[in-house]
Amino acid sequence: MKQFIFFVLVLSCAAGLVAQDLPEHRFVSGNWSIQGGRVYQNDANARLAKVNIKVPQSGPMLYDFNARYEDGAQDGQGGFGIHLFADSALNTPSWGCGKSYLLWLNYDERPLKNSGIQPGLTGQVYRSISNSQMELLYSVDLNDYAELLTPDNLSSEVPFKIWVDGDTGEVRIYDPTDPDLATYYYFSVDKKDLPLKGDWVVMRTNGIKMSFAPEEE
Image 1 (cartoon, one colour):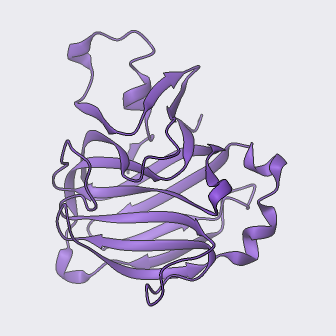
Image 2 (spheres, rainbow, N blue to C red):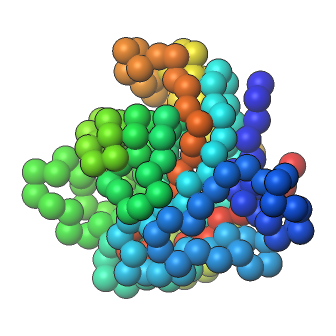
């Protein structure tokens, strides 16, 4: 299985590698920085903050990283997510990301009416059709986990493990509350999009400060 440890490509900047050894990447919108081995998005007002990283993707892929809330959700809204198997990545702010799938974790106390999104904590899956068009495929109510959003937990690094088979379209999202990361939720992407292939991974935030780092093996 091919494996991609999320953000290790960008974090290698901090390791002092020469430029020609780095894959193509760009901090596009928001206020990004690298500090102490973590990548930070520091602008709580940025609605379309993102970083583009060029990574060839096909077949089975594993995305393994941790995320930590830093600030910005006092207004009752904030979210972050990851575009996978993106065929292109626009180097300006954008709603979508070429042809790709966006996995999104969202907190919104007052979502728009008729949006198909439940109030509170949700997990969402979007199919990106272009840089300006996306469709919501699933919105999963995660409010059973909302009691975990305590000040102590919010300051913790939360592990995320996502496995995608680009050939079959199966996606597994492992439960970060399982200490062994053995429990997962799964779904399949639209068969007409198979096989999934892409050259870009795009991490993005909306109205929130976050930091990320690769999980240590």
